[in-house]
Length: 128
Image (tube, rainbow, N blue to C red; front, side):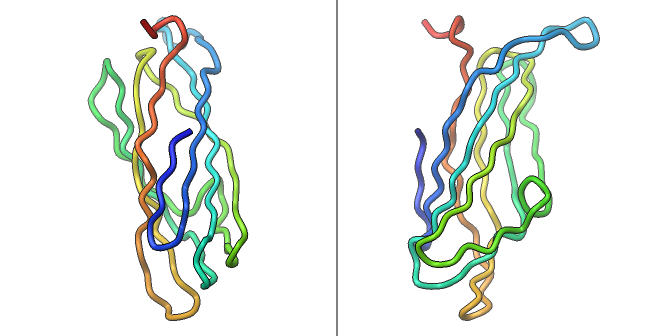
């Protein structure tokens, strides 16, 4: 598990290898990840957007920006958490992702960024 705490918001990530498949005559490697965002602060916060850098051993880095996560902009009260799962397709059996969430603190209307730890993907057969 990969974990990072920023301004009282803890982000934990678990990854999994989901398998391979062919698309457009090329093999692709499917990875899943589950992220839990825990609010360890005393303030209610809302996740409004995300930024990802996706690293693939066989391709250039890809940047992805968007609103919320999985179509939602969760509000997370103190002591509570939000968990979601998503996935990533790579051209290589090895890669990584990192990024940050944009959040708003409801107490003082402050906008801030929460770091997402770099997490790695590796198909079991690619690990030496």
